[in-house]
Image 1: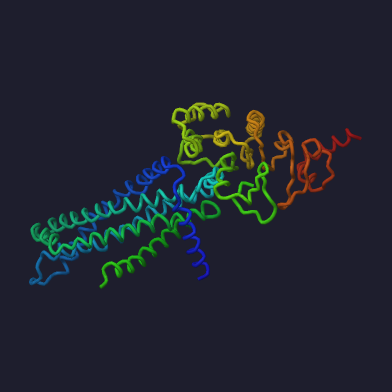
Image 2: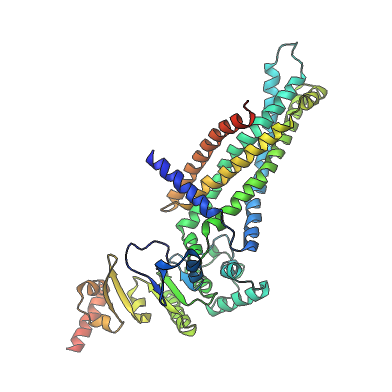
Length: 248
Length: 209
């Protein structure tokens, strides 16, 4: 328990150092766009692939579970849309990104730590936390909502495609369901969740990488630990955010 | 000495400026006057040689790209490196990486240069090249250079003022001339730990009668 408290305290102290004014704005923006490419653009492919197929699976499973002939078919589209917007895209894609991007962040910062590159920054008089972590946080928080919008869109398209191929739902019914009872606030809820998860995805792995001690094996262990903790925090935050934003 | 760790006791003074009394801002300003060559070179492995050497200039000056490039090429030339601007550190040999690290350390014209085991992992010939380079740069730019080393060849060759530390405590202080004559057991055990050096010492003592 004492160890958890110590790590939590150290994590918030780290954030205090991260959120300082960048020492050189031009270098900061350069780093920011590099992070957008490393953490955001490079993740679009896997997110698109997973979203399209999971969208298809959601439609097939929903259709197969709505066997009652009195249940209108358009509900398949409606249920799929709600599943994708409320849960699949913001939460599950964030957990997938925690694995992909989280391990990248921990291993890259951890390797910099064990090869003295972070010490080199400090000796030069650079706030290494601000220099390394702030661009990652901002890149994640600003870019991941776009990724989630892509995920929702492709999930819906995937579902539509699967429905047509399997013949479980007609195009008209599916599109009716997609448009029916649309609540724009659900998109807002989804994007707020994504922004919070993006912050978690950027900071927890950065913490594990920045304070790693030892060599290659420790960096590997830190990456695993970072992914586990990021996923746990996302799941717990998901519960509280849902209660706060959707609960009555 | 670089302030990466908080001292438990004692004081670190840079030209009369007490490190412990400095504000964070003053410490950052002081660090701009310091160049550091790390044991493992500590080059940014995702950046090219040019980007590595240019990095301090980008962070702390408002020079144009062309001016920075000119300075980068000048210091790379000074450490005898040519046509490596676009190479990544992983594409360079250990000796070349050390030279890039020296170039990065001197690019801001530092007042103080710290070298942590500059010869580690290098063959004896390359080690001498690096030693000579550090010595030349120290004299040329009038820098105070502090080298932390276990390599006694290097210490004897370029050390002007030598401090021997044992278990974190100063055991002996002198020069490359006086180190041969000292009676300090700890230092003689360390310096003459190899058979070759023991024979050299015996020969010297015989010579001195």
